[in-house]
Length: 187
Image 1 (cartoon, rainbow, N blue to C red):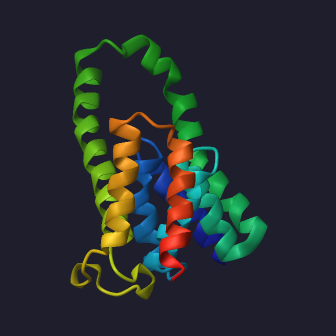
Image 2 (cartoon, helix red, strand yellow):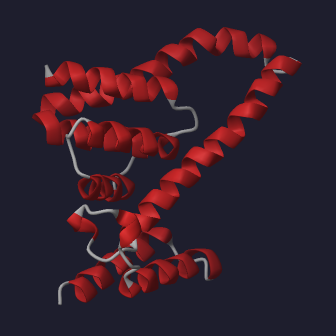
């Protein structure tokens, strides 16, 4: 039964998410927490792992959640289910797109979809940022009641400045941030 639930949930996520993996994160978070598969804190850990592994974040998150819920078979079902709608839609729309991509209605549709994707990605960024910067995010408490952890904020600002201001390699920045987190949060 859990495999069918995984398949249906991740098929629905794949079907109704346009804009890539970051746009999937709010839907994935809602579904897995509402099904009781993972807590909010565990979801943030899944996102962190999915970010650090090669591949699309939505696919990686589905793989990790599926594995956590139902082992290897669960990861295969979740990953396949989240990717299947895109495959079916792309195959189905490829002919239509090549003929009608310059049509005003097609352009209008995509003009409406773009801002919605920005909102979904911004929502995921706010949720992840809020959880990552709070005291004791593993407590799974009401996130609005917890104060910001200055240690997390310093690491976040430092990583942002390293990548965007000083043009440092993002992979090296992630590694340095992980080491800093290990040093700072171990004591």
